[in-house]
Length: 365
Image (cartoon, rainbow, N blue to C red):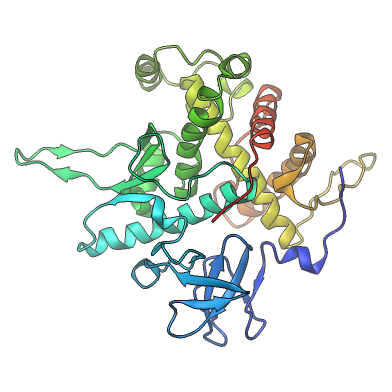
């Protein structure tokens, strides 16, 4: 596997400079805080570009580009290379949203879309199969960002976060930090974030696409167990009795022990966490090393999104999480990564890694 030490050019994969003044800007920025230049992110080039004040359309880097129609509404800073599309690649996959005349809903929608753009960033980097946008067909990836409703009888109609046949539903109340923390505490979860929701639920979508539709369920069952086990009954048992005994020995989270589908989705999400976390760490030259003197020094990976040997990712990830957990504890925060990766869980991460590598496709915006 080719490896090299970081160079300034590679660092910019996750550290961006304003094209106008050279100030450091960030992935979600739509404007430079130093020179006020308007910025837009172009997924196909992994670049933040400067755009003119009139925004639409403009010619940048030799391509016809448009800002997302949601730019002014929710701060979406992504660009589209298609003159036929009003929305960027990420936003056009959202097919239903709650009433945004309610300002609270508008703020929550903006937060959810910000997290979803990071999901799409990873999907693009992994070169996973992805439609340009849903056309109404069942089975295509689409997002419903909805809120609970009060029915005429006065009862509350709850929106459950989940996935069904390509449709991912997120209860937008999760975008409220206080509500999400309340849910996290009540459900006994050490970790609950918006990006975690998106990464988990899209794991269910890719189970359908990469395992069920490709008839490779037997390989899946050898690692995660038999998904034909009654799903509803399994969840009821989990919520009634709690996780399986000694779940830490075989699962990345307690919830993963509820059913093989949830085990896959939780492991899928953690693989995304690992690779995305490593890319950011390398960009900022965070370089934790093994403590033992006889262990070889790790050379940072050139591109954690495209490593053939998953063990290299794990060898780099574990020291980083130990260091980051220690940093968080030193300032009184919860652990950065409150999970333990047992040997069985590492084998499941390898399965996810190999599945993604086997299904890479060229990216088309």
